[in-house]
Image (tube, rainbow, N blue to C red):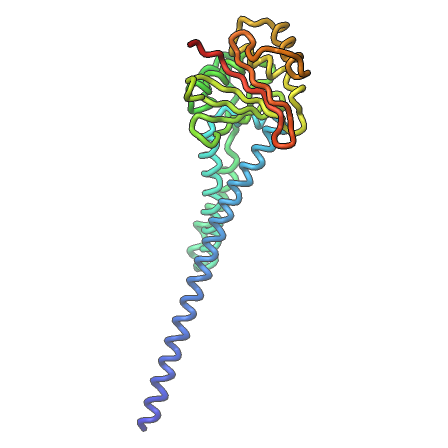
Length: 268
């Protein structure tokens, strides 16, 4: 009789171990599913960021780019983050609904039916005439003021304004070039760097050079600016300043692309 009691107890212990393993496996599957849902949202965020950068580089004059640039950089990031978080939560809800009874699946179904309405938010409306002064392009005051002045004077206003690796640095596109806009600490003024972009060389920077110089020193004439640029990029002998603008020209080499740096001449 005692032997039968021992066998029964061993069988009970085996059942407990099996139940414990099943519970752990179930928890692992749930954790993996949730992690994949979150990873999908993160991947979507990077995908949106990549598509946006390619769009502003290749089609800076498109309606989508113009509408998107009405928001400040932090606003675009928050909007993309909200969409990605919504997608992750929707995936988690869809996964969780498969484990619920028929009575509890009605609410997730209603939420899924409402998704298209939430994603189809209207694009920001085009500003009325004279409203550009109220647009904030960059969080830095010096950079934002330069972008505002440049867009008012240029035939190709800046698009795709995005944050740099420091708080006072930003990037934007104009005439197909990617331009670095830096609020320099040593001068407390704007430093503009125009770099060769997607096959466009320094010799193609004529218009963006002209528009930038006109903002930095409005007293210069078009003829003075264009003549200086043509001489500079052709290797002619020119001064390092044009009116009140300091000019640094770096031709293209095997180590780095060609670029032009522009900033106002600082008074001693």
